[in-house]
Length: 446
Image 1: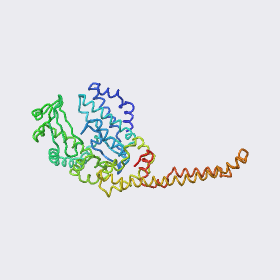
Image 2: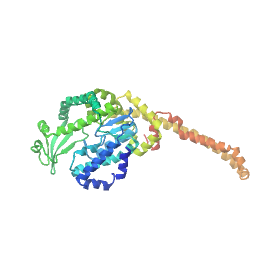
Image 3: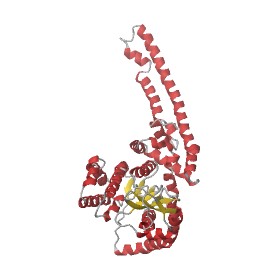
């Protein structure tokens, strides 16, 4: 990702000037910029990336995509949670590239340009994790020779496509049963408001029609009102297939990376999990457990929101061994538990908080013992030196005085006491030392 992070820095994509450039530049130049950016992302992809049991592939929402919401606040909220949780658990998180979606456009209206700016803001937000190699954009281009492609097609592609085709009726039925659609006419724009009763959409969404307005919507739309669409009107409008396209694209990504890169599925939607179970149950069984940990880490470690991303990265880098010990411990704990957000909070209260409190108590007790020894040594030394000062000895015989109270040996004893306090050897043995270090360094009360 070095090429990409260098581009982020040199182009200054987080500046007001750059955003104004995106808004004002002509269509052809913006199209060329999108092409160059996508080329840089592709060139930054490494096929030699380390794939471990702590590798994940995210869904579109957690990747900061404009589906299901293009508002920057929503995108950043999803990405911020992912960043912090990834620092505390993942070796590698593959995120989906939002800029590929702009390839198909020749003209960019204001809304589209604002979406691009939103994606650039997200790109700048994730830059520290790109630099550390924790985040990487997933590739959509895989090159095969003809023989290898035939094997890939027979072994994987045909089965996946067949399974997706099989579940399409189920998908359509789910969307029709769990989502209400309304013709939405506000100001001069007619669209469809989508209100989800499952967890596919985090909140209601409005899809606006810019170049073409389906007759099914135009006939029932009333300015200033929301009119509920019938099943037939929804089907004729094509909005179902807009949702279906996003769902299937997301499914292809996650299934492929799970199958070929041994990545765990990472999603904030139970809908995705249930869908994967239908399409590829083997992948579901193998790659959803670890993802529950990463998804719910902000509940298991509730104080991480108050720690800056750069501080979290520094502690992870400085405490590499303790990070791995803590992560292994957490992974073992989860193997015997199911993880809802409620159960994650319970895990923190029952397993993690007591250990952190125990380490704080140990540190407090150690401080009392060590500082007691130091003060005792200093008191003895200062008493002796004070007595000799009154006797007029110190200025003439300072070397003898220092030697008589231990000289460098005395200083060494104090130094060893302080060093033992700083090293916290007893605390370091605790499997949650890494979390304690975050809590202690940032003076967080739990």
